Length: 315
Image (cartoon, rainbow, N blue to C red; front, top):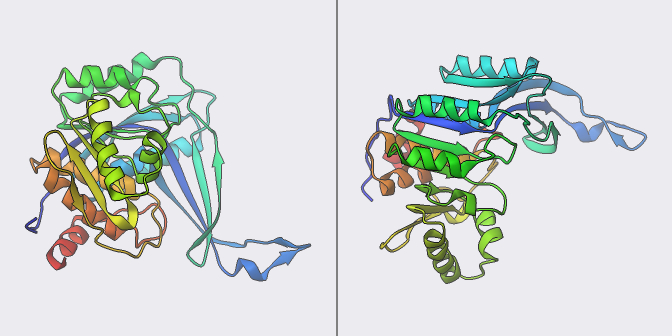
């Protein structure tokens, strides 16, 4: 595919999904300190970032897109932090704060660029008025070109078939980053972007390339998807479409320091590119280049449009 510089300014994308606060606690030389054989981790720095669906929105904003996010937060300090972080990167937000509920938070403790442990606080969002969420989505769809559903199985997207149904009525493409072992609920989506591990949980372990290609096409037809993209880490990405041969995008980097959030980057670049009128093949090509950039960074990181265009120009 011919390489060219791209412009994703003002790409109109609506993101709906599980919002998480990512907290990174940085230490140094933790292994040198012990107390009765228990390692001591002195923390030098704490950084907080939007996570989950909010990281998808952040990725879109960082490459120039005009993004709005809808989802749940708790009525707590962590929820306020998420709102401030989103405001700081100029992401429009229509969040539902749930009373007496905690914002889902993931704390990662790192030392010397290695993750020691992850601590998860609050398992799922529990809210008994789904119609409020749906109404916010419907009210926003007409102002956007693409809908991204970022499913982290944390309780926000409890009735995805319903969302797909009313979004398709408005002829807006639906991109979904899936989770779990029930892919039937994603039937009819425009694009599904599982990683290889998620894909194999549905179709079985694939030991040969032919098995991936055969089962990928079967899943595409079974779920009545417009397209299926399997992200395969060091082996790149493979795109399946109706009445077309699968297209494979070789990995642009074989060194992965941290794959955390790479899937968010992939779907963000595809969504922004489609919103600007690029073809699906072009959008996946750009996303593959972008993934090769973020996996060289530590933590849930994003990239800028300058980084992406530099990589496109040099690759």
